[in-house]
Length: 263
Image (cartoon, rainbow, N blue to C red; front, side, top):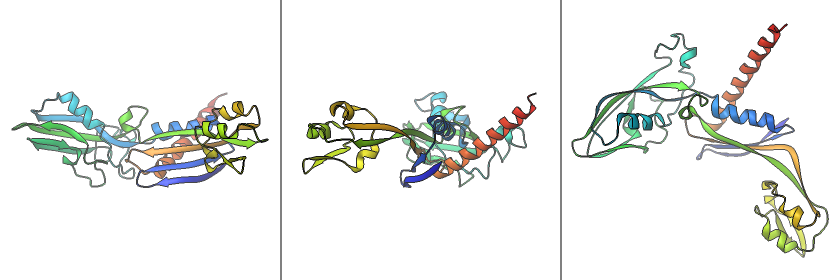
């Protein structure tokens, strides 16, 4: 197996890499690990002191729960793995407060937290609009969680596609027609000759070109896959990959130990 970096966009928190000489089942396992097994911080409990807004407590709490927060995995434990056994302590919980008075929009940036490393990824996320003399006062508890339990704990969007090998076996008669109808613009015509462009690597295997060329162009699936990770901002995309592989190793070790007990 070989892994090579294709793109790393820090502004968009996006990571793209190719995995060569593998199978779809393995790449799909990685995709699921990225999205569901890497812990991140999110609001779990909300205690309202005052809510004069036009939204019910449940709606406001739901909005707060979906706000992504930057996550420090070194400082916090999953509640089930903490020494307090999930009862609640500074190592597995973080208290936050929100106090606002109208008129005006309440944003995620109005949330006050005692830990500067844990803050809203996008400060301008609107929570609720308050009118004259309306007030909102509440206390929240944020904890680490997993995307497999609730999407608010999902750290990213991850997806992949199988790469294809496109080859021109012989020159077709309808060169211009093929170049125009390719959805990814993988072909161009120069000096009355059909050639492959740099976009050929983006082939989606729609098989339009083999059909139009009557078999003179071949599209063959390879054992290579392109994986894309777009972080919601709680963790860096690269950190998501590293943490997911740690979880995968733990799961494999657990499986091996269970298998060793089978007689």
